[in-house]
Length: 346
Image (cartoon, rainbow, N blue to C red; front, side, top):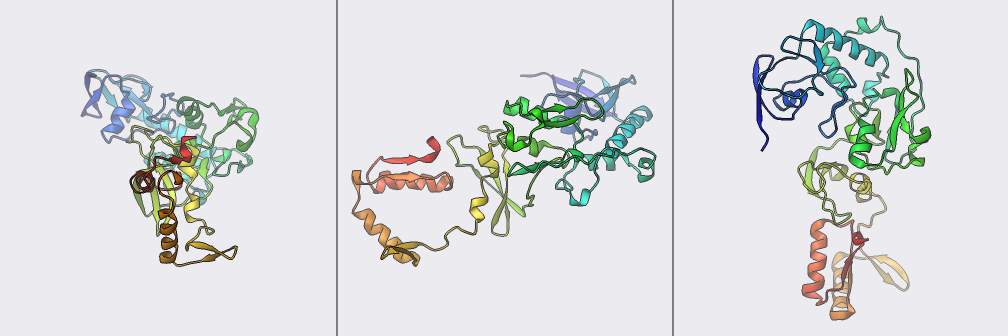
């Protein structure tokens, strides 16, 4: 069991766990410290220079890199801290494409959150020379796009691909004032080793990495992904009677908030216009639409003729977990055979 550490943040008594950094401890206690490059799933790097704090009235230090210590007095705001943050956020905004209303991350943008917290004023930005860059947007990936003009070089995507996915598909290119994030050789995503898992997309604090068709759900339903046997927890985003998004369940121990390309993006077949809405029965060599009662009676009669070892069932990863359970139960209990298989075992 880890030891508890007692200290103060802006005069408020805080209890944290030994080994925790100040930023995570503050956020866990609903104390906001501006940050862009920090993510709880990743090792802290202190690259954005926004999470500075003062400890015991001393010099400013990055709270994401500073571990909690017994009895320290942390101050999250002072004239020195404010000035340093102000300069950092203004330079980031001056280097950023600010088409916020058309941005997929407009509803959940960390840059906007920090800007609002710092009270950035347009007149102050006017004194800065804005970066004149119009880098091409990479739309090669079928599920998401990358706009380097919106990138704040926080490195979250690079570290996600390295630390969580273990693929290393992304890195920093053209070091210096021209630094951008890109794939090896700066090739399009579709030509890289990227597996389209989307882990970098869901962690991007701005709209640099964003889904091609961002849709917002009216409600969510908790369920289990059935594409393979891992059993990843997911939340299906529902709008009307359509599934419009998938979000990973961070509380599920099997995946802890991560998903593969199938689990995250493989849901569009549900709403596909070519899906059958009525059963088809082959008559005179041609498929014809039939009513459900007629189709079910035909299936039941055929099944009755094929009990035992004549029968085998193949379940599908595009069925729900409950449907797959019923398929194997039906095969064993009703049809009297253990000949049941599933495409996900491959």
